Length: 550
Image 1 (cartoon, rainbow, N blue to C red):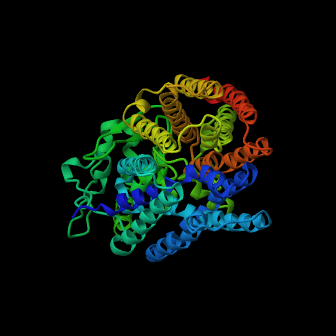
Image 2 (cartoon, helix red, strand yellow):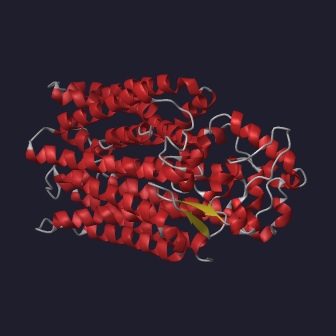
C-alpha cells in the first residue's frame, strides 16, 4: 500500500502557514494596532524559530512520542488564533483597554512561536524518517507539494474575499481550522514513524537508484561473506569506498565540488550526488578489513535506529527554515568538527591558504544571506498594508500576490533540482538574483495606481520569489561545497538558516516598525525602499567574495 500521509501532513501544515504573511495586514486593519507593536509581534515569530530544534532533539531519542507531541503542539498552537476571534465575536477595546489588547496579541504570538513554529521542522523530520534512504530523492518533491497546497489556499482566500464577500478574520480562521484538524487527523489515524519500503513508496527494484543498491548484500549459510555489489565503480574510484560504509555516508558526499550527478527516480524529483575528486577516505582502515566492514554494515542496516533529524539539514534541496533545527545541537556543543578534521588529515591535505579562502567564502555567504533576510523583512513586513492603504489595492488581490511568490519559489526549487545545478554559474545566478531584487526596490517606490498595477505587482512578487529562492539554494549549496566535515556542514547550514530565516528578519521587521513609528505614511515607506535598494546593492558586492573566484 502506497504511503501518502507524510506528504499530506506537510500539505496540511502548509495550509495553516498560508495565513502568516497576512497577519500584519490583519492586525493593522482589524485590531487597529500601530506598526511598531506589530513589528515586535512579528519578530517574536522569527526569533522563536531558534528553539525549534529542542523538540526535534527530544523526539529523536523518543520516537514513540511523535503522535502525542505533534497532536499536543497542534492543539496548543490553537490558542494563537485568539486574535482572530476578537472581531468575529465583536469584542471592542476602548482607548483605556489598549494594554489588554497588546497583552492578548503578545500571548497569541508567543503561543504561535512556542507551539506552532516547531511543527514545521518536526513534520519535515518525520517525512525524511519515513522516506529513509530515499529521502534525498523524494524530499524535494514533498516540499513542492506543500508549496502547491499553500498556493491553492492563497488563491482560495482571494476568491472567498472577492466572490463571497466573507470577512478576512472569518476566512483566516477557517483556513487555520481546516489545516490544524487535518494535521491532528493524519497524526492520530495514520502516523507511524519508521522507514518505508520501496513498495510503500511505489518504487520497484528496477527503478531504485544505483546508489542505493549497495544495501543488497549476500551472505552464505556458512558465515562467509560474498563481495558486496558496488555500483560506484561506474563513477570511478572516488565513490568506491562508500559501499564499505553504511548508507548514511551518502549524506556526507553532497555538494563536495561543483559537479553534481543527477539521479532520476520514478514519480519524484531527482536529486544529486557529488563526485568528490579530492576528498580523503572516510575510514582508511576499511580497505584493509573489507569482510569486517561488510558484516558491520549488515548489522547496522538491520538494527540501526531511525534517521536523526539533523539529516534534514544537509539534503540538497531544503526549505530555508529546515536547517535551523540543528542550532540547538550547535548551542549544546554537539557540532564541534575539530576532532573530525584532525582524524581525517584535513589540515594535512589542505594548505593554510585554502583553509583561509574557504573560511572567507563561508563568511561572505553568511553575510550575503543575512543582508538578504534583513532586507526582505524590512521591505515586506508592512508591504501589503502599504499597498492597501496608500495605493488602495483591494484586499482580495493580496492573497493572489502571495500566491505569485509561492509559485516562483516552487518553480525555482524544481529548476534548481532538475537542471540549473548541473549547469550553474554562480556569478551569473547571483547577479541575476540581485538584479531582480534591486529592480523590485526601484519599481515599488515608483508604483502608481493604474490599469496595470495588478499585473505589475504579480510580476514583482514573482521576481522576489525567484531571487530569494535562487540565493538561498546557491548559497546553502556552496557552504556544503567548501566545508569538508560532516558536522561542519550541519553547523554551517544551521547558522545560515538562523541568520536568513530568524535573526535577520527579526531585526528587519523591528527596523521597519521603527521607521513607520509615527504612522503608515508614503514617505516612511519610500525611505524603506531606498534603504532596501542600498542593502541589496551591498549584498551584491559582498556576494563576489564567494562567486568571484569561480
